[in-house]
Length: 292
Image (cartoon, rainbow, N blue to C red; front, side, top):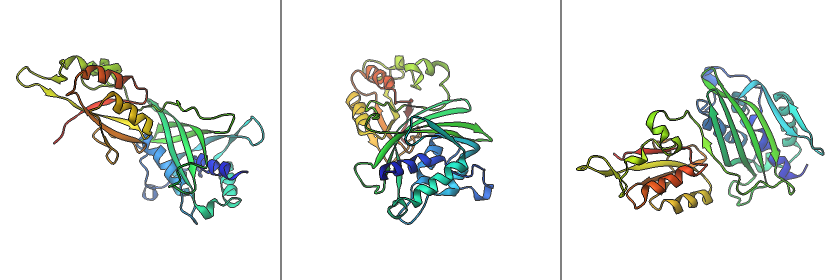
């Protein structure tokens, strides 16, 4: 097995573990109350420094006991359906037969598309594998389809299906990340800008202000954009008022794979600008914010 494929295998193994919940006092650090938190924990758990190994305890904490791992079979076009324990054995075997334990490993999320409906969630993740986290180019990439369910007051992984990128199956550059987590907005706000905007565009005047005639103000707003420079540049080309705050989650609560963008309606054509932002598939919502 080539080194990059082994690295990709490790990145794919984000859901490996014994599959049982731990005692409350032994729970590893992971935000299992949110889908974003589970995805972040998966790729954090599989990454390790030279001489180390994956955080097996954390991995065990994230899967349902009967979780299924669908993996491409070597040398054929078939897909193997593995139990957690079957996959654990392959994972450890791959570590021992490669140089990864010596070099360390880092699996990272390049793009993610998340959809949530009630107690069901689906994440389509483009992952990258590296031995040196500072390396510009990954050793390999792939796509993982992760199915989650919410039960017992938290999110669990039920299925992970993996496909590795290869010369005859490149990951499209326009593979659009889109995060649509959470319930739909209710009431009038849901009808504004396709339900992504929590204030009404019709309330803005031509100058981008809203409020009573003697007290009109501009509206500041937040949105989250996946950590992809092309997408950030696209948003800023639409809205020149946007400021990027990469180290903040904001009031809107950007995930670990997103950057916070803050804009203002105090500009010409604010309604058109917001309409274009709402139309972007990777913008899940735009939320009004206040500065104290």
